[in-house]
Amino acid sequence: MLRKTIIFLAIASALSACGKHDKDPAKPDAANAQADAKQKDGKAVQLLVAPEDVLTVQSSALANGPVITGSVQPERKADLRAEVSAIVLQVLKENGDPVKKGDVLVKLDETSIRDSLMSAQEAQRAASQALDQSNRALERLKTLRASGMTSAQALDDAEVRRNSAQSELSAARARLVAAQQQVTRTVVRAPFDGIVSDRKVSPGDTAAIGKELLKVIDPTSMRFEGRVSADKIAAVKVGQPVFFRVNGYGEQKFTGIVKRIDPSANDITRQVEVLVGFSNEARPRVAGLYAEGRIDAELSDAITLPESAMVKAGDKTYAWKVKGGQLAKIDLTVGSRDPRTGNFEIKNGLASGDSVLRHPGSTLKDGQKVEMAAAARVASAAGTANSATNSAPQGK
Image (tube, rainbow, N blue to C red; front, side):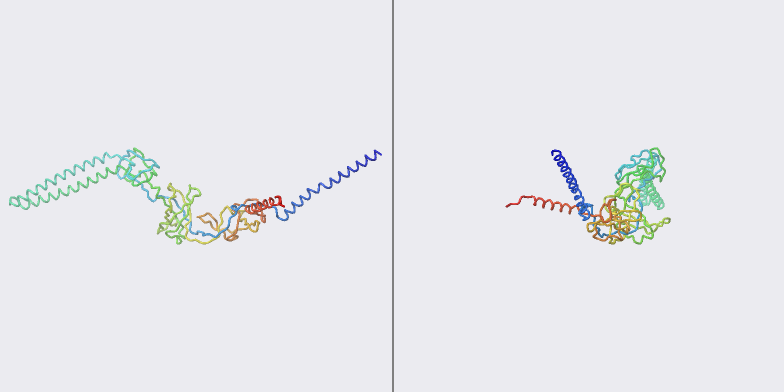
């Protein structure tokens, strides 16, 4: 009897264990089914987007005009050359040194020129004494002629000598002034405030007349000396704005205004020179840098988009449009680039008011669900508030 009882309990335990085993696995299967249902219903958020990640497409003014290329050059520049033939004694400034108007830059040997100056001074002194003697002799002859003690011919001869002495004195003074100028030219001075851009001589060099000594430029007078193709010059007018970049200044943008258009084209390149003045204080301080830009000959309204919002795949360009909580891959027809803003003209694919991703990634998919981060935070806050309300104890 005891053995039968033990067998019965063992069978009951086995059946109970089988019942538990069949009942427990049903729990995870139900959870998985519920999760799958949520995925099918679209309740699970696949992409959360912040408002700053979305760009609203707008119509803006697009600048069109001819391309201008050239270099930045100073309007005030001086090539200082030797005006006398002499030996270079001193060069007081180096390349890049700032100078003030009147500063001594180069000194030339004035020994031989100083001798010429002294000779001219002596010649003037002698001519002045000769004129004094001629005047006194003429006055004496006038007195004698009044008393009848000399002839009219003698008086006329005295007047001729006096006039000749006057001429000699004038010539001597002119020679003295020329000699003084030659001495002055042995000291080369800065013609205006600026910097030394190119030193050409050193102490001991022989400076012949016309030899270049150094160059001085005014860095505050920089301008864009550009060239425009002759077939586009009809669209260029004085006063039009110009936007350009300068080599060596990265992506920094400079603005200017057309100041002058040359009346003739270059004989070789058939390009027309256009002078552009900077419209603000931001300007390069180095002359000779290459510059390239565009003249705003006309403005037109167009849909524009920054380059960061566009994705290029081979020959195609597209953007990711956000509409109805989904992403849509939109093919774009891209036009010219606005030199002022750097944005590209969108000829086809988008309209004003469309929303696109500002910086799209490489893992996006067409039709992917999108939820704005602000809306998600509001929904989460509302859910938290409702949960707190339901869990609060109800008063009787």
